[in-house]
Length: 185
Image (cartoon, rainbow, N blue to C red; front, top):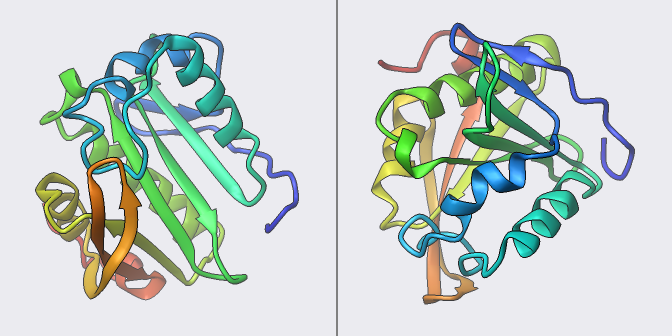
């Protein structure tokens, strides 16, 4: 997968359709990507313009080794967020995600990430997925723990971000854990 173009399968859940970047996704996600509170725990500051958001999303969609599923209501409509997956060291996959601020608390992020994990572990038989999150990002940590991820360690002073040097918490999930139903509701 590293460096090779990847065909992104369309995935569906009960409420969501996960697909490649489409025109209009930047406009839909710009309010969240430009919101200082929503972007607190990201490695970069909020987007300053719609054009910067568009360029950022297009660059991410074209980054070798990464796949970005944008999700929208299954029946159609604007993008509500994304789930990104990048291959590391020929095996482990790094997971990232974002949901529109106004749609938080509806279980949509968990639904979208679960769908991608089903694809990675079930269809692709990948062995490991990990996520890197700020220790103070309680919502992200809670999502990972509900999905069955294990806190594996703390990397001190790992990121130099727009809010200063930050530690990272590394959460990991193995294929057999996901398929064995370790996640909680």
